Image (cartoon, rainbow, N blue to C red; front, side, top):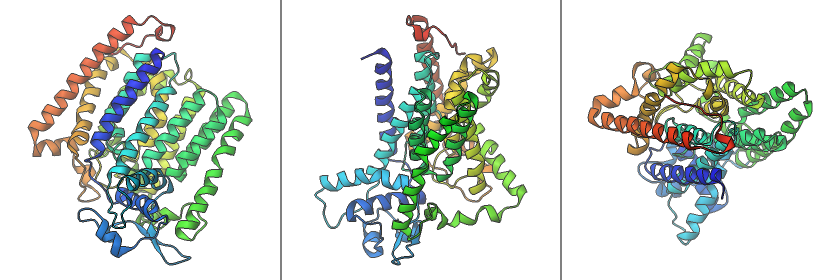
Length: 453
C-alpha cells in the first residue's frame, strides 16, 4: 500500500470512529426523524404508507406521527413522509440489516441507530472523495490536515456525519463530482451530480455551473454535454419516486407538501436580504461566525483565482449559486436541533478544493492566525459533537440575538473553557506534526511546501 493510501485509510478509520460514536447521541429533529421513519417503513413493510396506530406505538420517546412532515398520496389517499428521496433511500439497507439481525419480528420498533451510522459512513465516503480531489501539487500532509479541518472544525461533523440529513447525500455527490473533475472523467461528474440531486434537486444548478465553466474555459462544449447527459436522468428517477410516494409526477412533490413551500412568497426583498446576511454573519448561525477560518483564506483565494484549476473555480461558483437559491427557499437559520449551521454546508464542500489549492497564497498574518482559529473552531464544534448538543431556537430572531458559544458558556462556563482549550491544544499539536511531516517529506508530491502559522 502506498504512503498516500495509508494516510487516506487512517483518515477514514479515525473519522469513521468519531463520526459513528457522536452520531449515536445527537438530538433528533423533525426533519431527521421523518426521514428515518420513511426508511424504516420501506425496510420493514416494502411500502411507504404510514399506519398511525402501529407507527405511534413503534416510535421512540415522545415522538408521534403527528410530529412528522407528512403528505397524502393523491392516488390512494395514503399518508406518507414528505422528505427528499436520497436520504430516505440511503438508510433503507441499514434498516433491512437490522431487521434481519433481530429476526424480523412483527412488532418491530423504530430505532435511529441504523440511519445515524449510515450517515457517518456516507460522511466518511464524501470526505475521502474530497481528499482525493486535491491535486498532488498540494503536499500530502497538508491534504490530510486540511481534510481533517473540514471534518472536525465545521458542522460537517455535527450535521452531515451526525444524522441522515439531505446534506449527507449531497456531500457524497459533491465529493464525487470533485474527485471525477480532478481526473477529467466528465461522465462520472454527471453521475455524481445526479447523486447530489437526490438530496437537493436544486443542486442541478451547481452541476450545470461546473459543466459550463469548465467547458467554456477549455472551449470544449462536449464536457458540458457529458455532464448533463449523466445527471439529467436523475430527474426522471425523482419523478418516478414522486409518482410512487405522492401520486404526482413532479420531482419536487415531497418538499412541496412541506410548510416551507410558500416561504419565498411570504417575504419582502428586504427580508430576503436579511436571510442572506443571516447565513453569513448572524451570531447564532452565520458561517463566518462558526467558521472564521474562511476570513483568513479569502484573500488567498483571490490571489489564486486565475491560477487555480478551472474545475475548482466552477465547483465553487456552483456552490455559491446553490446557496443563494437555498437561502431564497429557506429561512436563514434552517430550523433547530442541530449544532452550528446547515444551509451553507453544500457551498462549503464545493469550495473546499479551491480553498486547498489556495493555501500557499496565504499571507504571513493569516498563517499566524490559522492555528488558533482552527483550534477554536475544533473546540466549538466538539462541544456539540461530543456532548450531543443541539440549538433550540425560540423565535426566528434567536440567531441574531444569541452567540451560541456565549449562551452555552452562560450555562456551563467550565465545560466550554475546557473543551475549547483542548481544541487549541490539539490544533497546536497538529501544527507540530504538519511541520515535521513537511520537513521530512522526500517524495516529489511534497516538494511544494505550504507552511502554516
